[in-house]
Length: 234
Image (spheres, rainbow, N blue to C red):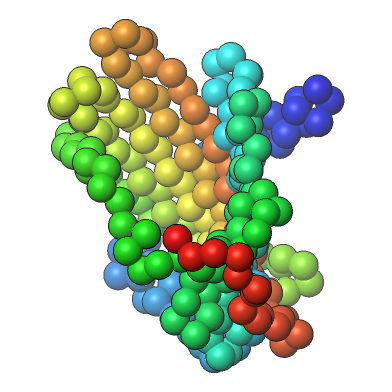
């Protein structure tokens, strides 16, 4: 319980601080130019991308949901993904390895299976929505020191109103993304604060959800990825 309230305070503090960032409003062209090559430094390198997130219905403070993913890449290329999801009703752990054109999957510490190319296709009907309103703002937040590194910080704030006509659902979405770039324009950290108000016929006043997602990137020349021993193919 104590950990839950600590996470709540951290989340709401981050949203409050992020919403108050002033900085300098810039044109989209300047923003795009600053971020265009942020992943270039990882080409042909071994590195790790770690993302952690927490989502809380802020009006009730119940049903905390959190998830974490760690993706490792080698220069070969090959990749290994660890994804963990935690909610009051569901706790899952999935590992995925992609190497030599093949994909291997293991769930909740079970046996490795080889995934066939067709198994990744979804037959679920795509939910269509209409963007009823949209606006985007771009900002330069200046120079900051992050873990003893000099960085340039940029932000993008998107606001949308979405209509799902078939289900008569309306979503008011606000997404604020903050980027920390090194002196060469490479990405070091990314932070995303999302707030969604979802309205429906059953709930005309709407439910509000907020989430905080943080991603960091780091080089690691010691990453090694090998194909696992497979129990079966699906």
